[in-house]
View 1 (tube, rainbow, N blue to C red):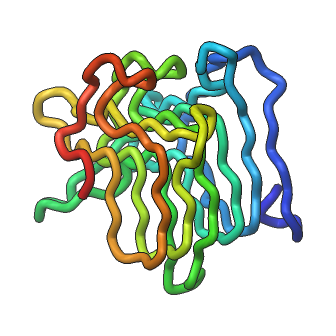
View 2 (cartoon, rainbow, N blue to C red; view 1 turned 135 degrees about the vertical axis):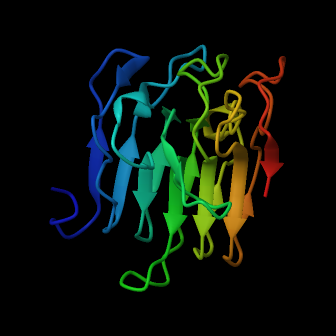
Length: 202
């Protein structure tokens, strides 16, 4: 609905903190400016957890941003399934992607903050995505994280079980002038315990 509506739409949640949403198929890509705001409890628990473990039959990403000027805040995104193409690359399995495509080029200027990518809503339990916590693909001038604990992204726990396809906290494939500030890659949200990624940053 937001994609078909011009202007900056806002998706907010009136759900108990820590609510788990388990979609049965991949969510549609975001193709127009959009704010998704979940928030967090005083102890840091994210408002909403998006769990991809019920998606079957193919690869999936949690949120695909194919737009500019979006604001994404306060979600935990985990267990997105990846599929190998047989030559060492994988499709899907990313908690969130910021990307440009041939049909939607030159995307950027997004704010992606306060996300737990590869953990549960508390930031203490690893729930690996199949490929990465966050993937930036040919997208410019994005702000990833920010000052203060509420804007800090956690990209940890993407260390998969034996035989898993991916497991990178943050991956960047092209993209200019992206700003990374105050993110946690590897530890839990509090920085007091190891959750790990097979690769921290790629």
